[in-house]
Length: 230
Picture 1 (cartoon, rainbow, N blue to C red):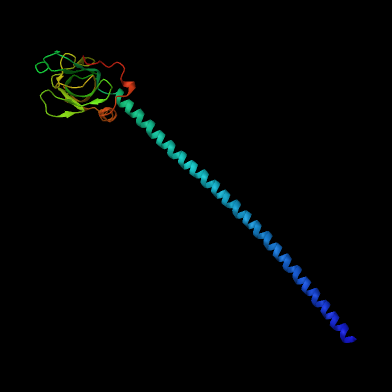
Picture 2: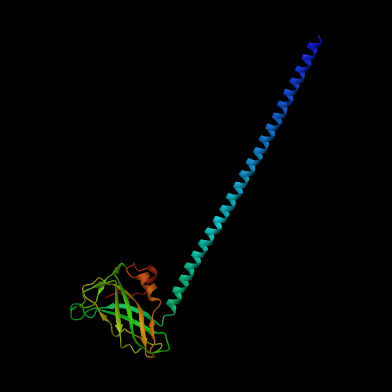
């Protein structure tokens, strides 16, 4: 009987130990799950914060680039307008005039341009560029009278301008072009000039002018006031 009681007591102790081990293991397991869930939430929270920061930085970078591009475009626009307004010689009027309705070979059509001297010096000579358009304001190639080459631009040279400060010239003489042609309207811009004081002026606006108009449809805002060929 004593042996049986001892064995029963040992069994009870073993069962109690097993139960304790199971409880401890369960506690450790649940603690592990809780920590792991917290770490996962923290990682997701950190990742969300990083993504938010990256999006914010990306928006700031894109906004900065857009602002710089817009500023650059505005600066270029302002500079071009400034160059246009500060030309030393400006073309006030340009046109193609018919000298005779029938005998074009003897009396070719003439390109005319009224040029004004905006300086305090006397202009000795200048070169001016003409661009031509048809009745639909599409670009037209023109050829110098008795010439052999069609171009979208025509360069006229006046080496006897003698243009005094504030005065205008050019409507009493011009440059002859070949016929037939399809020219209805023309525009012009002075390319360069030489003054009697020895100064040689190259128009810094001419490059922008050619970029905008040469070989391109004439913008609607530039069509008003043009003199049609007749």
